[in-house]
Image 1 (cartoon, rainbow, N blue to C red):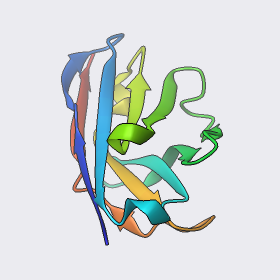
Image 2: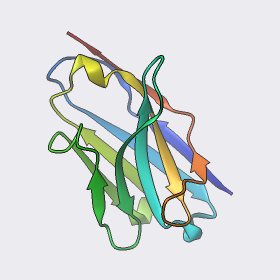
Image 3: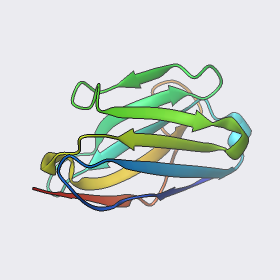
Length: 118
């Protein structure tokens, strides 16, 4: 089992930045990749970004490319999402996920709320 705990959400104004953190514990040696997702009210969960844990390769959804950056600290078993130039449409609950193999996320955090006011 892997436990994930997100932090760093909050209420900000449009144009501001936030950095989300997701700390992993437990059987983290089996991690292939970690990713960030979000879910706004009434919408499906949306993929944002992912990072291959060992190599550091990253991938992004078009909706956040150029504004959001995913990174990881292997020593701290933590993945980050730096979010710049936030917009009201970025308002959502943000989740991190952990994957043991390509294409499937096996573990999820509890989520952290991000609210962007106009």
